[in-house]
Every structure is written in C-alpha cells, then in structure tokens.
Length: 466
Image (tube, rainbow, N blue to C red):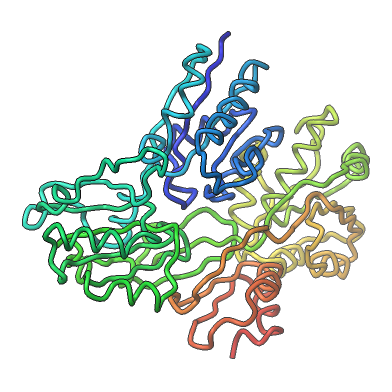
C-alpha cells in the first residue's frame, strides 16, 4: 500500500509552533486523531473533508488507569483508518518522543507492518525555557539538563527515578509534576538539595494565558496554592532560574491583544497575542449566491469589502463552471490592500482601491466617478455593515448585496488574565461584540485601539473608549 501513518508533534500549545513540515502533513490528512490538550486552532489547518477525532472520543475516560487499554484503542483506530486507504495523522502534544507514550502506540502498528513516520515537534520544556527567559543550560550554572516525569506509571512497581543522581549539578525539568510537587521536593531535599534551590513553574506554556511562578523549595508550594496553579505546567529547577530576573523578555515587553484574523505581526517592539474573535465559515447552501453569479456579466462593478468576499466569490464562480474570463468588461473595486492582494491570487487587478482603507474611503472614491444608474454587485458576510450599500445607493447606483460567507464567534475561547496586557486592538464591529459577549468589559487601565471608523463607533457604543 502506497501510504503511511504520521505521528506528528503539534508543539507545546501555540498553534504557530508546529513545524513547517508538520503543518504541510496536517493539511493533507484525511483523518487526524489528536490529543485533547492540542489547541483546537491548529485543526483549522485541516482540509474541510478531514475527519477530526479527539482521543477522548476513543476512550471516554481520560483518567483510565490502565493506559495500555487506551493506547491499544487509539492504535487500533489508526490501523483501521490506514487499512481503508486513508491518510492518517496521529497528532500528539509537544514532541511525540518525549513523555508521549509513543512506543506503546506504535507497537501494534509494527506488528501489523503498518508504515509510519515520526515528525518531531517543539517540546514544552524548550518552549517554557524560551518564553520565560530561563535558559536550560548556561556555562556558569548548568552544563547538563535532565527531563523527568513527575507522574510515573503506577503499574510498573519500582520507580526508575534515582533522586540522588538527580540532585547533581545541572538543570532539572519536570513534566506532569504539579500534583506531586510536594512529594518531589521532599525527595530532592532528602537527596541533598537546599531549601534555597530556585524553582520556576510555567503554566499553559506558549498560550495566551501562560503564567510564570518563581520561588524556591522553601516557598513554592505556598505560591502554587495561593495562585491556584494547575496542570498543564512545566517545572524548571536549578540556578538557571535566577536568569529570569533579567532575561524575562516577555514580561518586560509591551503586550497587545490583537482580536482580528490578520496575519501575525512581527518585528515590532510590542508583542502581539492573536486571539481571533471572529471565525469565517462558508454558507451551508450556495444555491442563491450561485444563481447571482451566473448572471454576473450584467453588472458594471463588483465591490469587494474583504478578502473573504474575494475567496468565496471565486470559489463559487469556479464551482459553477466559470472562470475570470466571465468577468470581462466588469470593473473591480477593493476596500484595501489585503483585499487587493487576494484578488491578485486569482489573477485579477483591482480598478479602484481607496487611499483610506474603509467603507467610507470606498464611498469617497466612488463619489469622484459617475456611477449613477450603474449596477454594482457587493459580496459580503452575513454580519456586514450596510453603510457601504447605502453610501453607493446615495450616488444613484443600483446595489445588489449578496451574502457570500458567515462571520461567527469562535468556540473554546480561553479564559484570560487581562491584567497582563497593555492594549487591546479591535479590527471589526463583530469582534467588539464577541469580546463583550465572552469577556465583558476589560479593565479600565488597558488601552483600547480600533482599526476603522465602524469598529471605533461600535467600541464607543459599548463604552470601551473614553
């Protein structure tokens, strides 16, 4: 069989930390069997027809004490899907080979002679190190680093951990150890570690709600209880923890919560945390929209107010058997640069792009052109502001506004400690409304900024601005 199964590392949490190779494999998969801790946003990269199966659906008791039963059930499903000729990805947290029970899941595949490939991922330990300013090694403090599980298999009898050896010089990194931390610290102290040993706990590594707790063996349990620290978390023990005091770049940076769906922003002094508060989805039924596109040649203008309008317009046009030749003689307007660039992806150059990238900017540009009596087609979302249609109709144009896609609130939006942010940036009215619906009003000390006059107006409506 010309096929194989991929065991793929999803990274520590942030969906952007999957590898380039891993992302390409994920996009081609027919079936993705993923760990429950995998950030669901990473699954947005799967093709529409892909079957997404959480491991909790295979074995409903996630705390199943006999883990071999759980592993076997997952492996059997992988084999079944593979033998049906499907492209199967087993998506595991972090790196598959580090505390991921990889060999247990692979053994049935080996026995069945199923071809497989293991793709590395960013493990939580290195991510925690980078995002806390605590190097795992340092020529002054630690020339070695040991990864240790804080939760051994209860069925194997004698522990494989030699705490006397683990007290030697170097950095100790604990996985899955929050619950057993008091017992672990007691064992390390008995083995010779000082009460003043530095320790850091990084909870929700790489996610928007990451939390860092610094202390010593003397006070860390009190701090854990006081701050309600729970799994998942990585624990770093050793003198390297002291470096957090002046290498904690994330804590020192200006942090902006970006609520739009634009691409990640880099090379800025500020750190942008992306929390998309809108999600773009296709319509369930394109019958009506398709019927309009079959008569698109009668229009004088097509006005695209977003790059998603461009995407779903052309996808639908192609599905009904037409291509860009059918647009011959029709002028094209784009609301801004991202919409203009999306048109270029389909081989179309916009005839009109306003200098001010907004609905009002488009209306102002059209006022310089005689569009009286012109027929304009406006593909839009189900929540689009009607100001653009009204503005063009006031110039005596005839506007046909058609819903091309849906704008919905994302599921599973995380709990957030807004006190860590300096600014919240909104990019759409629906983003403002969805924020209020999920989180309520933000703290007064956080700066609120808005892109576009319509977004600004919506923010003022909810008293987000002074």
